[in-house]
Image (cartoon, rainbow over all chains, first blue to last red; front, side):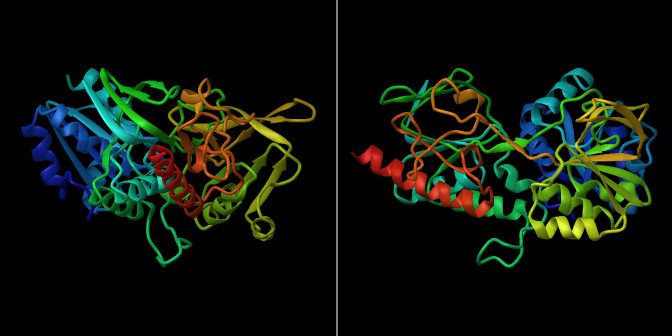
Length: 113
Length: 305
């Protein structure tokens, strides 16, 4: 279980339901590791700034996280966390490795505005 | 809008949080401003096993405990802020975050350091696509593969050894003809059959498609460039002090580290320094904590004069 204050995605079915029922979704698939924790923290802070976006995380090592690990947009990714940005149920952007709050904001403004 | 404090601490890593604990426990009105998430470099450490009194913890847990401790004494902490202006001259110090002005009688600079990048072609493009800065995080993506570790300090050699659990081979590329690591770390790396060395050389560029396929390695003596096919590169080339914002206001050494005396006082009156941003030899959580406590006690003495 990820020790964050974000809502967790626990199953592939839940993942599908969330991206279909919310226009804008950001999901960070990671571990409680040094490259992932700053991303969760930035997401927690951005929740109030972007009320139109659903911010969630998912345990990278859960078998259910294959929906992110094996997504075509993550081909070639070799750095945690894998972060997916969904717009109307489709992947708008995917990133690998640590991203700072400013970098995340730039992606949110560009792809999930 | 103006907010007045006795002491403002810039930076919320081990040094800054310790200063916050000492200051606020002494009933000194204290604000910590941190440009990222509190914890600093400490948060980038998976496992801490040498912090006295705590057998084993993670950087995240220790950071959160320090933050909670500081806040419990009344310390205000703002993280992920963007500091727009700093004026450390005169008796009243001014820090601006956007349009908000904060003033203080004393400032403690504890802005820490950051991992150095190589700054060569392809490094940004392939971050997370064959370039990593964390062996514990990303090592398992390279299982059975051939990788390079760049660097010659303790981190580079220790992480190279730890990566041999996953990978087929590790080539350590180091710019000098000798290592800066402790002798024990060098011996362990040299004894590992999976590790080989390219000395007096540096990476000149990363190339590939959706991930790194090869690097160019430059020989430091001849400047000759050779191509090496590789699955991944881990970079551990030390830290740079986060001191750019202060270079006109306090004295720095040639490495950009802030010079301070034994009381952690900088060259500017009322400005103290603590942690990795300070000129010193040993950069550990324990030494940052020590700096933070010393800076706080002397800042208290300064404002009470």
